[in-house]
Length: 273
Image 1 (tube, one colour):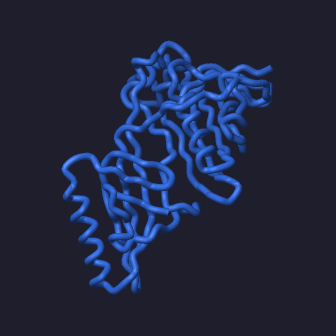
Image 2: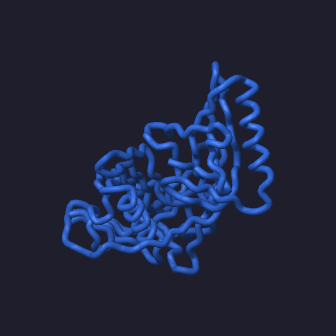
């Protein structure tokens, strides 16, 4: 599998792809959904919860960091020579660079390369910044299931739920504004919103199927408006995403690809049946 920076294979610099933490591929962050930028909601002091900003022209996204883990083998002078060649190539770029990998191709720039020397080798972590992330995708068809997002079954996204947390917590109080001298003061205020934290797995029957399912998740969580999530046919959560989601612990195997999925959603309302 090739890893190319501005069309030059990283093997040119003696770099061999390694494994990201808890993964069997060298990449991490390349499937993450980035966070929103700017104001995502308004919190009124005299009302419970928040007012979401979810119109199409209110939604903007930051970029994301993609990390590559690799190794270089050789003498100290050989290691230094390869690293210097890599650094010179990075610094020679006069515009955005292109990082092509078997899993994702990104346009951006190299933020950092951090080597760690050892006897006869060095490991390195290269962090590549992708300023603009393509969040387009196609939504699966709606269907009947105990677990759905906007009437689309979790399984249509390749999503398997491990747990959903925090819905039963009493939300914290909003910030109190008061002045009191001589003893503890207080102010009766409204409460913040609930948060729905979803942990699970994404499973694809192949790399391309996995990528397609990730793009579908980008599409639904970046779409205007709020999402309606039903859990076990008993809990309905109206919510929206501000921090994107993470995909890590990625394992590629003969039958497909599997990774851990995590997202934290701001809940506007929660109802039980």
